Image 1 (cartoon, rainbow, N blue to C red):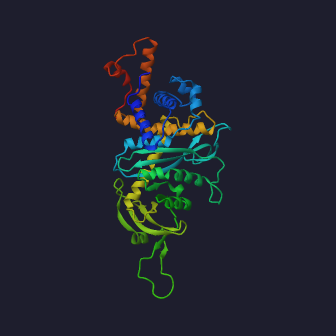
Image 2 (tube, helix red, strand yellow):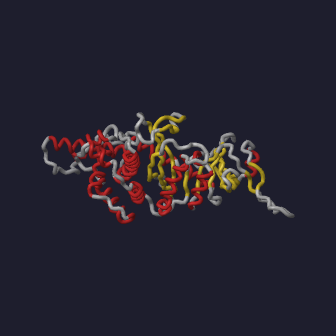
Image 3 (cartoon, rainbow, N blue to C red):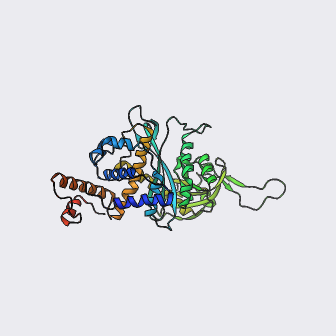
Amino acid sequence: MLPQPLLTPVVSTIFRKMSDIYNCSVGTWQRRFLRELFQAVLALRGRVNFTNLARFSRFHEQTYRRHFKKAFQWVWFNLIVFRLRRHPEEPIIGVFDCSFLPKSGTKTWGLGRFFSSLAGKPKKGLEVSVLGVVATSSRRAFGVDATQTPPDLSTGQTGEYSRVDFYLEQIVDLYDQFADLGVNYWVGDGFYAKQKVFDTITDLGGNLITRLRSDANLRYLYTGPPKEGPGAPKRYDGKIDWSDPQELAKRFDEVGRLLDQPEVRVLTTVANSPHFGRDLRVVLLVGPEGEEQIIFASTDTTQHAEEIVRYYRLRYQIEFVIRDAKQHTGLTHCQARSQKKLDFHLNMSVTMVNLLRLLADRAECSPRTYRREAYNRLLIGRLFSKLGLSAEYDRKDPRVQSVVHTGRMAV
């Protein structure tokens, strides 16, 4: 097999930094297996499963099945990839999202009914919860941890253990590692606008940015003169009426318009949420006709409105990581049914997106082009081997490179 450029030195650097920074030593056999696995995933065509991996590598199918049962510190591996790509002074945010994975059969661990945004309703399958980080200046997103959602968890607001509690456990377990990178703001979509999510993240010392319902129950803070006489001072000044544009324009501060959508006005104020039991920095986006409204909120009442909007929109970058994992690295292709193998496969798939983007960035090409050329290198190596030609050919020879670049797309 013609080695993939940059892959071996990059992976070796990551293993070395894992040992230096996190005191995590990867065994010789696991290093060898992971290098072969990464190279096979980059080069293969078709589904990323045990059978197809064996077709495109030197290892037997049973070797993949056996190694997928073994634990590996994917979180630390991904954090090292992030350190290799980020700018040291670039602010970063933590993001989290869930994704539905179709799965048939009856014996797969975690099989249940989960909401599919594509179908717009719950469907039978699996669900993966992904934590990641986004560099706010370069807009680069990195998946850090992929955890499969257990089945049969409550989806309501009852006192029993629910899926929201499970999602929060994932954040709590990794909060210190994210904080060491400088993550202070956590961003989730409107599903995470729940009291226990607000409480958990703020208790950890972070801030949550999310989207609120269009009819969110909020009330203005009282800013008038102090009340005279006995009794507690007045704190609130009425409920926010989202259907009254004149009152909103009067009591909210207009701070500008979206740069890419100048017809959208940005209004903001600090309001109190009785349901969440806290004051929030509220940002209201108003469409050109005044009827379309989007409400964002941040637990940091001193945060600028433009930054809240920008951070929330950056949240979508983690969805692109999940998309690329489904398209390029087989997030939905796992053949296994056991929890350990599924966990290994899901994290491997997300990690391969990070690694593929890093390698493509250094090779100055798109991830799709890098994968296409990886397959071409595999084919060239197999051809030379089967024809009995010398393996000591120049990989930089223009004639070899012209074949490698077959199908290359413009950056």
